[in-house]
Amino acid sequence: MSNVTYKYIRQNKDIQTYIDHADAALSTIGYTEHSKAHAEKAAETAFMILSELNYSERICELAQIAAYMHDIGNVINRNDHAQTGAVMAFRLLDCMGMPADEIAVVVSAIGNHDEKTASPVNPIAAAIILADKTDVRRSRVRHTVLGGGEREPDVAQDVHDRVNYACVRSSVGFSKDKEAIVLDLVIDEEISSIMEYFEIFLDRMVLCRKAAETLKARFELIMNNSKVL
Image (cartoon, rainbow, N blue to C red; front, side, top):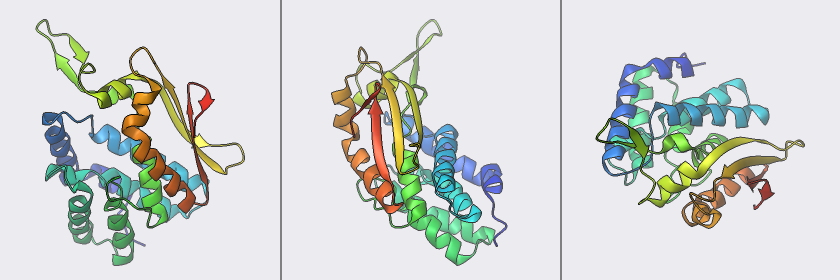
């Protein structure tokens, strides 16, 4: 078994540098937060999903590693960032001595997480898709520093910011029978309508459904205590 662990990946200064610079690049073009917080949240959720479905400990850890690294390609460009990130991850993991069979599933998962080109080609890819696309939260909205030093969210112009800021609570888990992966959201409709959520997230929710099916599960979406998917 490889000695490249999730703990080691999280502590790797090079990977952290790429995540930081990728997030800074996205900030300049108005994208929501893609920092270490998003990477850790995605890793936590991907691990939870595969662990609950009784995948092996190592497969769960590889999902953590892939999820933590999935957005590093944004340091090059937002366009095709999944594919460039996969190539970057290959070089980093290969230099660390991770076995080829593990690198293969990790880079395939990273290369298949963006909704424009994504496909749940293996369980790790499916878990990353679900973990990434369900990370909807208020703290992902960028802030502007005002003249007096106060900070306020940028929600007026961008629908992505508005929807994320309107999300006052979100959680991902399993139904009681363990047959459905459930995204449970509470949306403040005075900030953003539920229709706006679907305007920007419908493709992602369809992809989540496909990812769940790959894992022999259903995908369900609950919004404001009502099941909508």
